[in-house]
Amino acid sequence: MSEQLLSLFGINPSDVVDDTAPFVTLTTRTQVLEKLANNQNFDLLILGGGLTGSLVAHEAALQGIRVLLLEQGYFGADALAWNVRISRQLRAAPRELFRARQALKMLSSQRAPHLVAALPTDSHPVTGLMAAAVWRCVPLVNVDERLLIRESVLAARQEGAAVLAAVTPVYVEAESAESGCYVVEFEDQLTKQCYQARIGGILIDPSHGILPPSRLGSYVINAPAPGTAGMQWVYEAEPKSAKSGLAFTSFELTDGSFVSVQRKGVATIVVTLLWGATEMTPEQCFLAIEEAVREAGWIVKHEVSQRSIAGRWESRYRVAQVKGIFQCSHRGPWDAFASARRIVKTLLEISSEPRVMRNTPKRLLPGGEQNCEADAFRALARAQGISEQTIERVVGRWRGRVRYLAQLPNGLRELVPGVLRGEVELAVRSDQVTSVDDLVVGALELQDTPSWREAISALKARLEAFAD
Image (cartoon, rainbow, N blue to C red):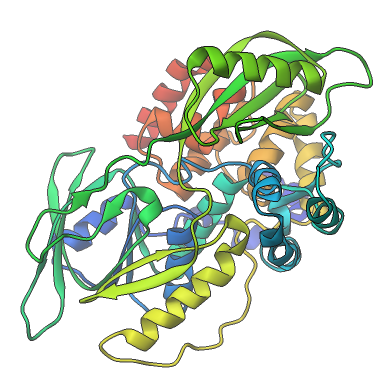
């Protein structure tokens, strides 16, 4: 790589050696498992790697707490665009969104400006004086929550937290009445091996379907599935006319259900249907989305992918303690940062050795990009012959991490449409992906690309090459 190119990304050529590759200093998945095999002790175990769990892990690590974060699937599996959440919440409980305005302002200006994007006003008119007043006050924004979760996990890892995805808790038991600690066993889904950890306290996010044991020494209880909260479809489509096809539109149905149509790319839309009081039949679903897509000004060509959405949309913040096992939730995704600090503060106060929470500097999440860095990446990628559509997909996917792609071997060589070779390596190094599914759906978000199925074999081969 030329010195001119390195200086473009703010890198001193004399500092570029083999051990400065992006995220190479982070603790790997294998190293975490080795620590557990050697009876590593932790102060806090967090079950559930969603937005709450990842932010609490980061805040706790900043306070010097030895954290172990476990996730059964991949990080951000049930994430949903914030404009969908905000639009639904506006219609369900407009008073709740008065608090959201300052939270969104803080998120966009202090913690994650690279993940917040303003959107045009919703084309569907809101009803009611309260809703109309809130609509004028609260900005309609889109936050990539899946990327926000991954950035928070990365921040926690950089502060020393141990993080594992694709693991299943097996049981929790009290070590002894004197120690007040717990022994937790869980299974690695990849190797099918079981590991134990000695834990001072356990924090459980109920939105991930894991509940504390009914009695000490029992198996971890998997809560009954909360039921499907909705469905999401990705379509290849085109606008009816030059004036139609807005970036985001939403509709409330008579039964309380909610439909949103969001433009994801040049010719791709994402339709989200969240249930009202009762779950819809497939026939009712397709009638609802067909009308919503038509009203939004789109003509559907064919379906690209679909998935079910699970989760609780109106949970309220709380921390409950039962013998060292804590249970938490928060009001909404926009309140997650403030909730994480309150949760960690509560844990410090009610732990076996109470201590005051330190005032830590407000740090930007890793990946906070400067416009010049994104522009430099665009110029570099164009010089390499990468298509504009691919460039914008990469910038949208990785935001502030685009500068790392220039430091990776063959980072700017195109693998398949919409995927760069460096993206796969970056996903492996920074997010600890464990399967091609993690790459397609979790890290690269290819499920909304019309040709994503054609990329599977190439991505699988690339992932196996890194594993070797």
